[in-house]
Amino acid sequence: MIRKTIITLLLAAMSTGIIKASGEIDTVYVANNPHSVTVISKGNSRRVEINGREGIFRYESSVTDTSNIAAGSDEPDILMPFIKTASKKKRGSYIDYFCDLYGGAVIGTDAEKGFKRAGWEIGMLNLVKGGIALSSSTELSVGAGWVYRRLPIGGGMMPDADHGNLYLKPIAEGFHNVSSSISSFSLQVPVLLYQNIYDNLGIEIGGVANLNTYTTAKTSWHSDQNKHKTVFKGLHQRMLTVDAIARIGLRGVIALYVRYSPMSAFKPQHGPQYDSVSLGLSIGF
Image (cartoon, rainbow, N blue to C red):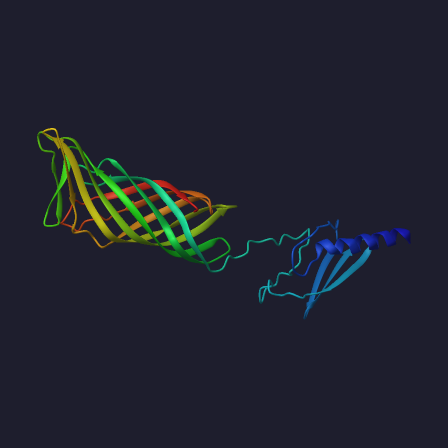
């Protein structure tokens, strides 16, 4: 009789931890080698029967908050130590602000002579971003941000322009300490698909539409002991270009990104044509 009383008290204490209709789990106790576990739900009440070697233990509780129970789900909203029911909760729709500050190197590829040197870029991929969870580990987002790029010109070439048409020419004899570059500022709209890989590690791929608002070229040099500088504005730039981007890193912390820009900043026949690849770090990924 004393043994059965002790077992009954232990099972009663056990029910506090292994069965909880809603809210957070406090303590989990292990029911060793149960023959069967039966969960019966009816209305707002729920009954659990554990059939073991010492008889049948029954526990009944009322469900006061059903907001976390998915409609039509066959899974009971309880935690049993011998049944794995943990899953990631969907984030749903969300809006973030001032995230994804990034910077890195820009290298001209498939370009005319003079674009083989590395430049740099800095930007904020998402001044504002709205997203929606497609599953517990996949999200789709659309944002708005900005980027500034500077691509140097070298290889014995320097820029010149005629009626807004930019072209490259060999550095003139007698010019020294020549420094030339093309700069651009763009508003950008990224459309990205995020996939969680493990824990806080994830990968993101997508496309970025760039609204190019301002593109200039400049060059400076010394000759006859004098310094000269020329800035070329009003160039025939493309108003819209599209990039591809991929990032991998720790969510909300840092990521490595690669970005491919297959479209030149200038319209065909109105400026040098070049592709570029960017590589760098993104903060607040």
